[in-house]
Length: 387
Image (cartoon, rainbow, N blue to C red; front, side, top):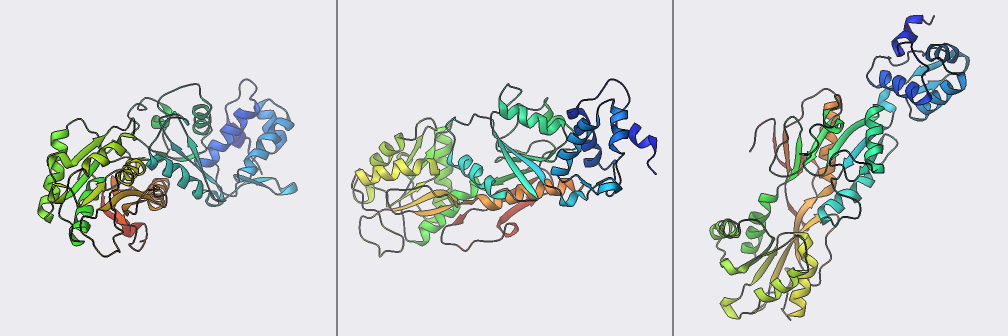
């Protein structure tokens, strides 16, 4: 027998409740476990009387809940709450900038890989311009998911430092994870590629291939002297020589300058010229390799027999979306699929009531290395504190 207290639990009596209000309230009760699996809902007549609306409006809300896999109708027996393990979970991947904004290839790869996560059990939606309240369609859609308690988790593609006072970060019960390097957001697990480990691995491979003189192309930082000193300190223990003027930086605002930088780096001859080039960001790869080609630099495939005065190029990449280049390159970078897989695992751990590691670092790998399982690719996973 259905108790009247059951309808009272759904919503306090008052003014008439419209379709969206009924839908959101019943959904919230189901998702929070207040309505148990296999529990029978009140009849349409009882719900209509309680919410002071029509049976048609109630049925509309129940139809949506059934489409979402939250309830099942069993004819004259009534409508029952389903096992939520079989309902589709809706996740968000948010970016702080607009769809048309010029973004990095890393973020483009995240966007592409998110589309591969779709399944009958999982929906991942991408939202842009989530950097504070605004009047965009994406922001309204995300807020609707939050208010209706349909958001199973959110992945921030960049540090959400401007969202601390807004529902996307303050609404309780929503699992969250940040994709960002070097910084841990208070209370939010962080997953990030081991950017600091990129150059050591690159230099080790070049030294093993017999290279001695290395030029490096990087994105511009605020302190050029410190960046040059850091690169030299990584190269020297591996027997590599990096002259200060062999480190060139390009602004993220215009990657076309990488073409000019690459041509300039290889103007010398003999030992006054580098015998290898590390492109430390894949956004620089197309233009810098085009510069080498235009300058007539003889670039070798690492599988070829070494010739005098040739140059070996090692370029950063995000797999499985390596950046096109104009010359042969040896690629070293990060797998986006395991990266997002780790993010999803951190969200699922929170949904299960577990405490995930505060930070998880994904190791860099070479293109010619065998792919490894997600957890094997993690080189550091700590339960708290900075490294």
